[in-house]
Amino acid sequence: VMTYLGTLPGGNFSFAKDINNRGQIVGSSDSGASTQHAVLWEDGQITDLGTLPGGTFSTALAINNRGQIVGSSTNAAGETHAVLWEDGVITDLGVPPGGTSSSAVDINNRGQIVILSQNGSGVTRSFLWEDGALTDLGVMPGATFTIARAINDRGQVAGDSFGAFLWEKGRMIDLEELEQPGSSTAHGINNRGEVVGAGSTDRIRFTRPAVLWTKR
Image 1 (cartoon, helix red, strand yellow):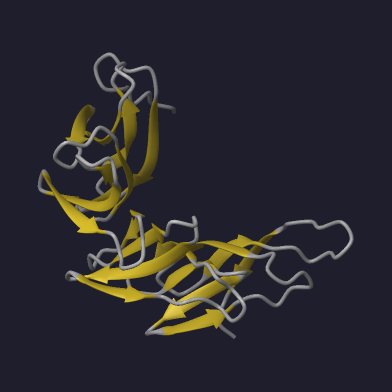
Image 2: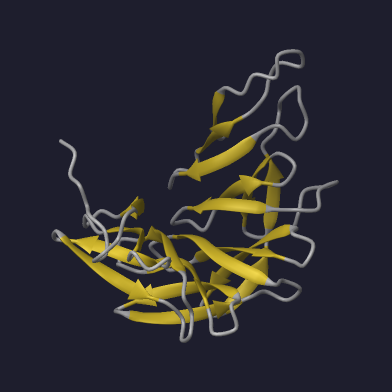
């Protein structure tokens, strides 16, 4: 059964990005005024999560089972910053050193947050935010970028850095065992440390089948 979640008043579109075990759903919606705000759907009601002071845009990308929500918002200066919504309060998580913008893409049930940051050249780096402290996840050998996409409750992070990786306790593990270097991507990880994504195994046809990485 499909349920229409609706939009903010006057809105024309909305996107649902994540759902937790309590049935709370987060995403974004316009309000018919060329603006897009992060929203929470709960018990059939839609709530505008708002923006940083002076901002006009926000989006929510993930929610944990504690109801903590992460995403990004513009501020009064028009800069895009990673943010955390908790109990109706929005917190600016800032931009890591060297970056010009940031976005929080995932949060686990311990409140650990994965943040992506871009510099002035458009290069993306990934960080782990925990209790106000930022940890740079680094890059794989030969790579200049890191795009983390998911974190589990053990603090393990999965993403790409010229190929799929698993980050754990300060160490980045190369998951790629494919014929086409740099072709794999990691998109999800569960609490058992199993990672899913895609990767090319054919040098000629460049096919990209779904793959599962598990511990030997």
